[in-house]
Amino acid sequence: YTLDEKEYFEKQEAGGKSIMIKWLAKKDANDYIRFVIEMDFLIIGVEDVEIEQDGLKSKANKGEIEMKINAYLLKDYEDNWSKNAFMTFLRETYDKFIIRARIESYEDDLYSETYKFVNEIKAFLELHRF
Image 1 (spheres, rainbow, N blue to C red):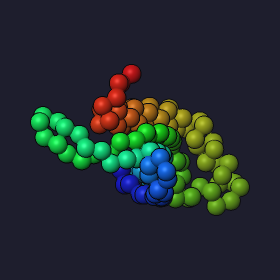
Image 2: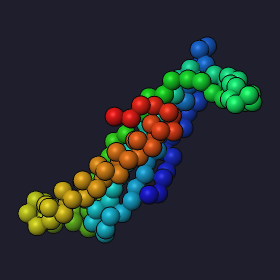
Image 3: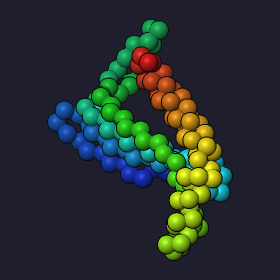
Image 4: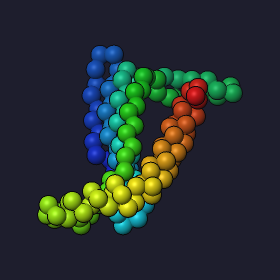
């Protein structure tokens, strides 16, 4: 995947710092289909804290995080099939009748990759996996 940071915003507030981050990850499955994962992070109440772990003190941050992850397939990402109405009709026919099973397989692959990614985030944040 290639990862682009689309937005990063920090704001200091009375209850701590707020951070908003937007990332966009893309991976080409082939020359027609691209996997896209959009990630939005909202972190509020970020405060510096000192923690003790194994007898050693270290600095860390404390706060609340909300994540939104949206994954989808982008078909014809180079717009080769969208140049006119007839080509758009051919693209829709191609999608619905010719490569429908392949698209569904790619959707399953993307779902699996996204689910694994979410579980990695949960493990990193030491949250319960379901």
